[in-house]
Length: 361
Image (cartoon, helix red, strand yellow):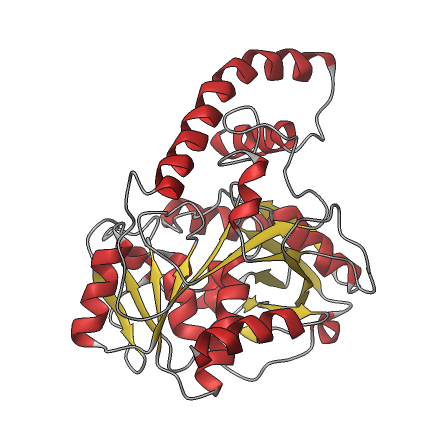
């Protein structure tokens, strides 16, 4: 029920539900969005004018965030930038809120770049995914990112920070502000919460130093609008399949002809399912789950029942889901494959130039 309501609200908020009842519900929600938008606008103004002062860390901070609720691919972009910096020999620490983990709120070290000390259930799925898929990356969580950064400075001594999901976290000063926008639907239906997907008014995009439009189509040379800041175009591709229990990566096309169940607990599970179908996979069943879902016994039974009922031989899920599946029964775990997303930036020159300029300073 909760998953169905979330899917309905998202369709309403991104403008794809346009029936008479949908328009009526939207009209009821809009009056709630107006004061919310005003509060967010005033908050940004107070920080911009210096009336509320942001805190500063002793190392450069690169913020990566978005304007909408979920679904723009922040984690793959954060991982991509982290790999670029690590390849140049820098010690990089990600500062994440740790949303959904039992330790959310207090500063804690997830990984020192060598050893991961927290499970996805403790630190949240995205910090755990970054720590486990980017070798050498340090990850620290905490709702107060300045306190998390101080903890990192004391114990890890990084050269710079990546502020994950940081566009609205104006309490921490940043040296480079990167904004991600969905190339197909950058502002949803144009309204802020709760009538739309926007966390703050669309005009806030002007705070960005660089806008990366994600989910662009291959070969797409235009973007939905021309912001006053520098722009990159990017897309996400399913790169292959890795057995949950470990093993070699195989191309997803090697699974053609096999009966597959696809399940995902992400903001836009349908995009994952569509991507698998475009590669020719036979999805005999799909199981969309809530974002940041907890894979407890009930969810495990739901996956097992879906596989039994559909006759699926194997199950495919995302990397974000994969880090939370450590408690699965062995018989089920051996039939599950992880399909991580690869980030492709059509022309990374603007991003590389900004990173280079920051590092030279």
